[in-house]
Image (cartoon, rainbow, N blue to C red; front, side):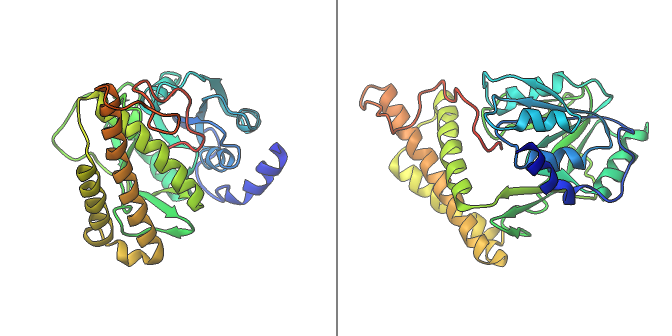
Length: 300
């Protein structure tokens, strides 16, 4: 399996860019069961002096494949949530700069060269946003709120930390500023979903985790709230953010966003009712507040 996965990703290797191991950057990646995608990600950042994969207890060849590609691999299977797990990976970094990636992302040669320029310039800022170019079920999305989708991923080691949110974690600069962070010009590539099965599975996981976070903060939900949030999510994606310009995938995304928001607040309602003693959680209902206990198989 390792050889097959590696050979299938050789075509994704950058044809040009900084020399391997030449840039003082630690690339940190959290992963679980990502053997099908981790090779492309690691190959794209061969320029980094250090590549770290923090595995969350993979049952496939993620660990062996990552090591075969030269990455340093550590295992932490006690899943604390995305934010905390990413901070664990960051704590392993030893180079002056850190670049955080997900296993379904990769760096093209233009972005690699720009990163090299930033980290070699002593006048560079401490923290940078990177625009992200994402695909949804085979289509690169140019609207729908998915472009340019800046994500904060490159920083001087010690100058930023991830929030401790179980999902939708954010990288927070140590020194908060009202000014927008500087943004690189070239985009990070992201294969968000390749199938509707992935969309539905992630929607279910994230709505459960988000409902648990909202319940822990004292929020309440209702059927009416769930309906309103779902409707607003559709309108925002399809109309206000131009999802209609992304063809049928834009409509698919708007509907899945609406469903995710609807189920988030519906699960919140059931969680609160269970906590108040008015309903008894079933085996198929939302998880209790200490969710999740295992990392999701597909990553963020």
